[in-house]
Length: 412
Image 1 (cartoon, rainbow, N blue to C red):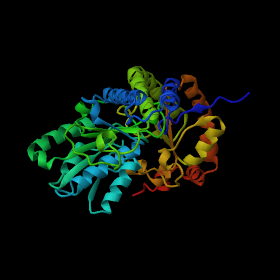
Image 2: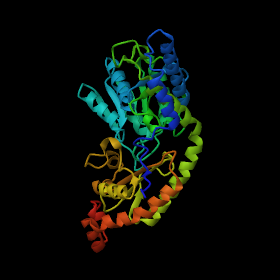
Image 3: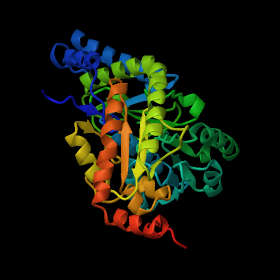
């Protein structure tokens, strides 16, 4: 009998919902017209795009559907927001503020801008992976034009104080005036559809979303751009996306994303309660069952579906392979860097030494995650950790000396 697979890597991607797939298939087969044409079936496709725009706007509390621009991915949305705003305002300032724990889409976009004359400040984070609003305030300069801070960390699940930053910037921008405005972008790719998101409460000018993180298809994303923000075009070509992103629209993907956002929003509060209870129970059981383990990220101010743990004296890669052999899919951090042998930049920024950062495990739940799946994990994980530790020179030395601080470089 084939073993049932347990999928605990929903932060990397989610399975497309049957309802979403059905909506998508309609626009891949029957209603396949180009929405820029003038006949009736084309008009139907255009109306479907507008409806999806309204669904995305409703999911994030946007005032107007025309504040939503569809893209090819969350990373594209992030790059468009950061690079375009920075370049458009270079004449009055070249300073950007971000954090050390951002997704690589943000970090690499900022690194690109640094090579092209921009100055980027990378804010430190505390032991929970959270930025301090006072730290951010202290590094704002007259030449600062953009701040980009993620809403929820994709690795450790910590929720950033986005609304507090938005309130701070509202006060600062009121003093600076419209001509010297600091724009505020947030990567909300892990947040939308999972926790309440309201762009007006957050005070952001731009917000990035990805469909495949909320049970939609891969290859489609969206960027919220507040009315009045002059965002230069990303792709020049046709007049699609009101002239800001040329190219025939991915109608099927866009319609599917709208449906996914609507469904996720309607179920969000109930799912968040369910996931939070499962999350807290799992954390307690693992920390109690496996010695020398620790939780990464904030205990309360975190995504309901995220559990990130470190197990001392082992390598995360071996743990993932052994879990996979037992039918459990998980990760050690961001899917975008899973092939790298380097430890998580997020955990290092939080102060973990390399030896501990290498032994991390990220578990992220989805709508189909059941309590029995987590019970199975709690059953198979302790012997896996024990097996890996039995092969670890660090563990062997610790058994002799009992001094973990010296082994991990903590000794002063």
